[in-house]
Image (cartoon, rainbow, N blue to C red; front, side, top):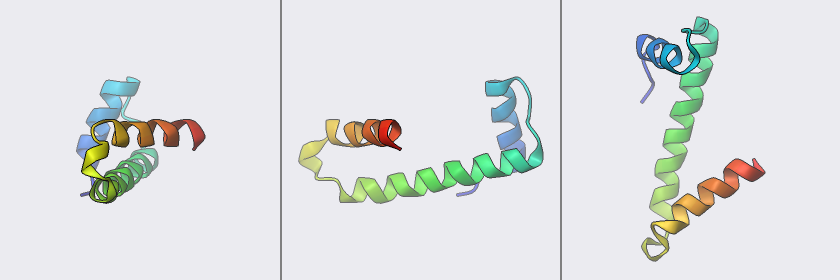
Length: 66
């Protein structure tokens, strides 16, 4: 679900001290939307016996290794 621009501007202002330009807000909103969709897909594939550590470990590894 895409983040509306006014919400993205508010979030950017809170985090960065400014709203950032519309192009950067749109890019960040698209990235966050893609991450949310990927996360939902990932959750469906994880073995419930691996939780809660499996999901967190996978995300940590992805963050470190790109």
